Length: 503
Ligand SMILES: *[C@@H]1O[C@H](CO)[C@@H](O)[C@H](O)[C@H]1NC(C)=O
Image (cartoon, rainbow, N blue to C red; front, side, top):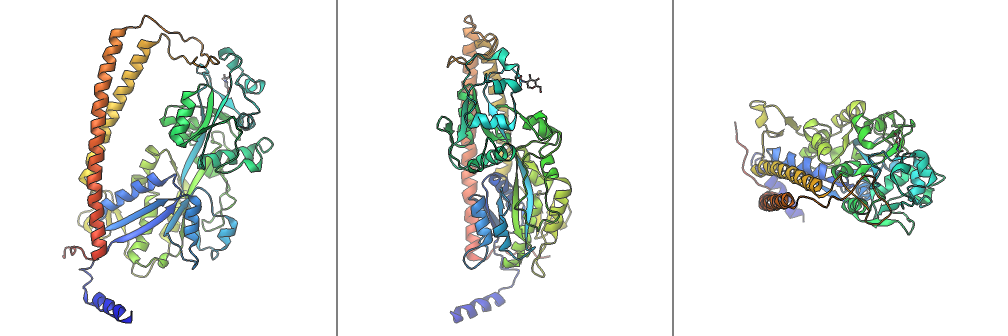
């Protein structure tokens, strides 16, 4: 034992530092919600780094992330940072030395209700208590007086009876946690404490739906259904959203709210401690004030220790800082908004977070990672510069393919809508279950069979091209992916890589 330690240190001394280049790695864990966003940023940074770096994030849920952050039996964190959709509880927070950990508010997510009630374009207005009575099955028909009270015009478009179908998630889900927390906060008389959580006891005549995809199917396949899903997802699927009564007494959709800054407003109006190292356990973003504020908002936090020297490799300590900085940097976080439907934390809260990240404690002499977005001649070639001028061919090629696929998808949608127009006189009809009939829809039996056939042929040839492109994209990804992993694995075991060029 002693001998091998001695040998190792002799080797360490003998090996010129310029020759040894081990992989610098950082690892986090926590909520699955933003995992795609984190993976995307990590992928980018790995490609853009000159030195071999490895960044991972395990999507294991907020509570596991928090448990790993709190640490194993010896009290040592098994992750270097964690992420969660909930603040750390008062009890767990008290187990840390006072002022030693940070809650960094990173991303806001809106959750909303979507429906397939044929309202003929009328907005479906719901207050929290009406929503609660619909979900707890006290109100089971869209023509119930309680519904009509907020939606007088429904009587013009709906037949009586028009049964309500309630779609809800089947397994533990953060969207269930958010909507139940919201309903309890705003309408405790209809939504008691015991109905709050990731999984709850639902009335038997609600419809279980699995995952966001399953929820979308549930809503679209059964007219008259109401369900909940994160807002970005719901709109990406083209679902119809409700109008929810907010704390300022305005009916608003999350789409309208987000266009008017009403998601970020929830964070600005919430009672957040002045210092990010304080106890956040009572911070709540639901039903905040403000004309355009969306009432069902959840915050994704990153939890990090202020002293990073528990991480052995000094370059990894500062790489954690670089990753956290990226979470507040345009070039990285924009994609999380555009592709994954989050809203970034901005303004004063962002400034506060960046200041805290800047002052995290690292070992003396730890290298500082910087970013190159605009070419910095010579300096950009530094060992610790993460440069967006470094790309990988497979990434670039994937981007081109995604762009092609987007064009093809748009063409298919267009063809579909053309086929719809040909197939029906005035639009859609939803009378399969005989209960709900949209006004003014009628089948046009004299549809033009020729043009339908033509559209179908074009459509199928495009679909085949789309599939081929997708398969090629997947293959390219597989091949380049395993290639990268092998390289990393090799350099990690050998702890030796090509020596950096000398001046
Ligand atoms: C919902 O309320 C708006 C006014 O806020 C009203 O224009 C609309 O007709 C209402 N929806 C229904 C179905 O009555």
